Amino acid sequence: MPLKLPVSEKDHIQGNADARIELVEYGDYQCPYCGAAYPEVKKVQKEMGDKMKLVFRNFPLTNMHENALNAAIAAEVAGNMGKFWEMHDMLYQNQRHLGYDYLVQYAEKIGLDTQQFEEKFQQPQYKEKIEQDLESGLRSGVNGTPSFFINGKKYEGSYNAEEMIEYLRSL
Image 1 (cartoon, helix red, strand yellow):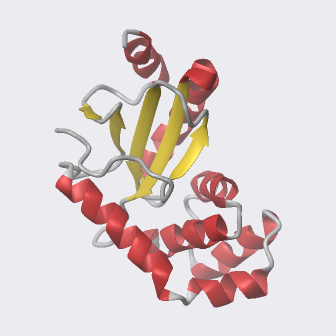
Image 2 (image 1 turned 60 degrees about the vertical axis):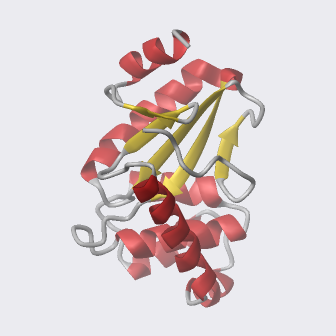
Image 3 (image 1 turned 30 degrees about the vertical axis):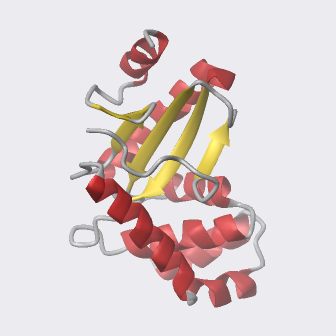
């Protein structure tokens, strides 16, 4: 199935913005499968270098993961404060501890003003952004996490780094 909402400046993009390979991940910070995919995606990024850009969209499975939404909000707030990818990494590296107090500690660890972080956390626009990500995922056929799209097409292969790299090199 194709990616229904093209990547835009509203997305979180890491890597070469002009890269010919675009890897979009729909993820949930509390999902154990996303946690397992996280180091694999890092390996893919390292191997592909400037040939690939990574885009992350939130897809919190709130019916299964009680802290997924707050973790996504924390990432979005951090993004607003210029530290999305630092928070993204922190959340995946500390996946078992995603309660609100931990989120504030992570904000401090990555150098954010925690008072400002906590004030922004309550604002509705972050939840709205996550709902837009969710909606775009549902419209694109996402029914679980992690889900990947490569150059606008759903990737059905393994998220094992070697397999993904081999596929990307064949493009």
